[in-house]
Amino acid sequence: MADNKLVISILKKIGEKIEEQKEYLTELDQPIGDSDHGINLARGFHEVAKKLPALEDKDIGTILKTVGMALVSTVGGASGPLYGSAFMKMGMALNGRMELNLEDFLKAMDTAIEAVKQRGKSTVEEATMLDAMVPAAEAMKKAALEGGESKSVLEAGCKAAWAGAEHTKDLVATKGRASYVGERGLGHQDPGATSFSFMLEVVKDAL
Image (cartoon, rainbow, N blue to C red; front, side, top):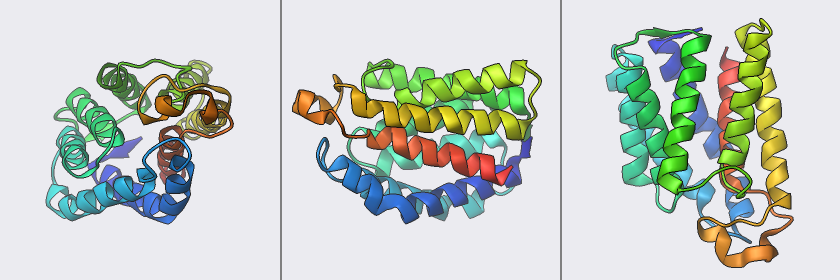
């Protein structure tokens, strides 16, 4: 599915996608958060981009752990620790690997979800990034079980992630900054669920 070089290329492209969508992500954050999700995440991935050249010959686990640490140290708000933990735990799951197959990727996704649940003390239906992550992981596992190739599995994941992000408009947030606005958050799409969906889309397109 991917070797360490492709993982680095995907991470660069994720940074470009976040930069391209940073105004939109920040706009989503305005009614329900600190109005900085896109700006913060773009800053984090600028830092990641600086570290990538030194990681070209490293294993995938080391690459992802380094990304996670960069995000934790540079991204403010809740998204830094959440995305940082997700990437670090994925890195631990893929320690020493120079290549990963679809099964490895799906296991690493499960690890990332667990990291976000623990760090955010949250679960699905609470208008967080998990509302995109969990349906995406479930759709990908189902597609893989049905014998799908990487491309069709990731397509199923992206479709479910975007549907999950859209669904956050119908949920009242009980976690994070968005919980302060309560029912006034209804009708607003969660920025974290949206940024995750963009990231998964980059992975799909790269493969």
